[in-house]
Length: 167
Image (cartoon, rainbow, N blue to C red; front, side):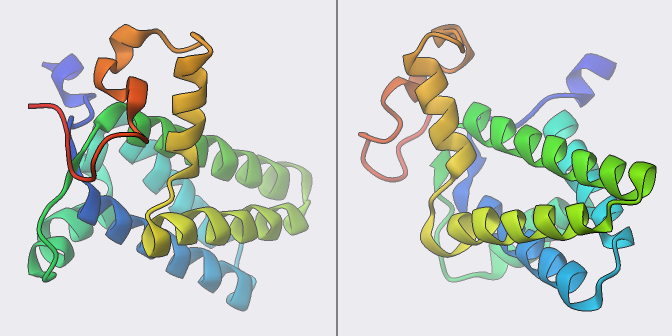
């Protein structure tokens, strides 16, 4: 039962993923504008929650998947889950590093660097549908660092027509 809880959806709705990314952009910009590193804790929790269990325990992902995305005019677009989970894991590592540097070592500037990088990366995802973490995942699969069994469908993810996903 616990193992089932810590699963990530496959496929995922690309529209909801992009909506979640837009929320990350907003929170990271707030962190920069308000200079409140505590917001980094919220971002870190969200990334860890999404990487560990998909949208189940992430307030931002729940808002995106259950409230915002269903009300958008865009049709749901299925996309493979493993690259999105990898991207969430990278976000978790970045934000946790920012938390440790800021609250563990007093390097508040680190929180702002992490936030600026998040604005760029999540902005690319939300506005232009460019998931840098997914692209890294694809490169790692091509280099056989990530085994094909993790996501057989992902082998040529960038060459597929848009919206084609696992059945």
